[in-house]
Image (cartoon, rainbow, N blue to C red; front, side, top):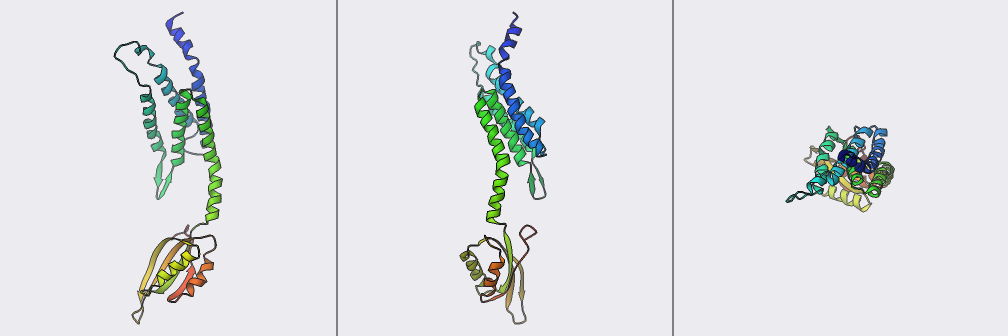
Amino acid sequence: MPDAVVAGLDELPLLVELGTALLFSSLIGLEREVSAKSAGMRTHALVGVGAALFMLVSKYGFGDLLAVDHISLDPSRVAAQIVSGIGFIGGGLIFVRRDAVRGLTTAASVWVVAAVGMASGGGLVVLAGATTAVHFLVALGYPPLLHLLRRSLREPQVMRIGYLDGHGVLRSVLTLCTSRGWTVLDLQVEREDTDDQGQRTAVVALRLRGKTPVSSLVGEIGALPGVLHAAAGESAETGF
């Protein structure tokens, strides 16, 4: 039997590892496809199969050089190049629009699918399958969990306070907020004036996070000495 045919028969078992990479990477890509992301099933499948093929070539593609003296082979070098090279594809999926960064999760999934392909090509099928399962756990299980956490923490709320400047009023306001269990996330001075009597006044907006509506705190703040007025402002989502 010709050597080429024998070599072809020897490569047939490697198709199992290549097929495993195709299966797992396609499953991950299907989740991205259903979510209508920029990189879908085809991109993930090609990345996974390509990474697996690189691993197989790294493991078995240079066997004829082993018989040559003074040549040392390091199969891990190809794997290292996959890790660095996949960053070019991931970087192309990330884009910034105004202040919003999009594509990070999809880029991360491409990075993971490359690792799944490498594991499949390296014969670590159980590890590749477990990583695929972890992807679905993170992609499908984490969003509901994060939604529950956000609801429990509540979105930041804004309270606007007018007070006499220079009398330590703001310090008293912040002390009262923290003593009632509120977290002061940010403070913004919106206006500073001087009245006819030379008294300086200021209006600040406090961004707070707590477990109750901020209106429950307005009455206490308004009763502090030196506070001219206090009211719940616009939510932090519509502008602060």
